[in-house]
Image (cartoon, rainbow, N blue to C red; front, side, top):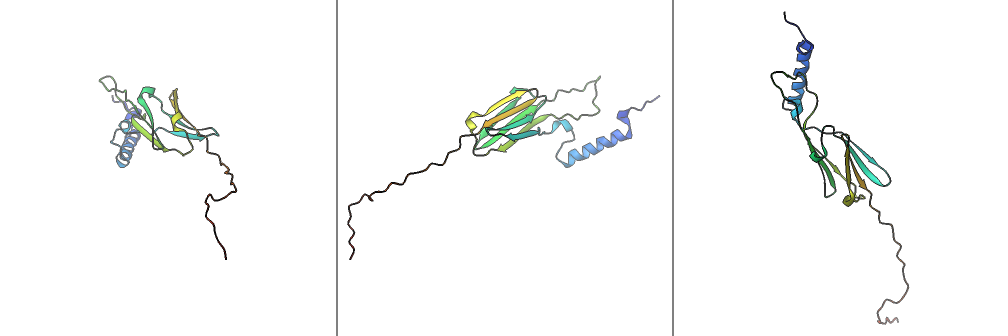
Length: 156
């Protein structure tokens, strides 16, 4: 007697075909977990700093690289896939994403890039960039005096 499970119903097959269609259309390769992914980020600003908070679950700190170059902050990394199919294990649905990621942000000019701090805790990377002291307007005193030359100007 054949039993029909949720994984073999027509609705599941239709979803799998729709997922495959979207993967093919938007640059995937038919395997949802094998393509690049983009971790979500929040960017917030206070009076003293700019903070970028990335949600990167399943990635260890040694798999993350934070760099700056010419005012562009880049965060790169890789979330490695750990699933293995064998005789006793078969995947019917894979929604978690794996692979390399890269996010770049143009930084405003008023930040001190030499003091960037990056902390990683519980799958959340927080990159803090302190604001640089802005140059304050300086008043230049105008002095009265001779023009420094000894030329005489005659008027008639």
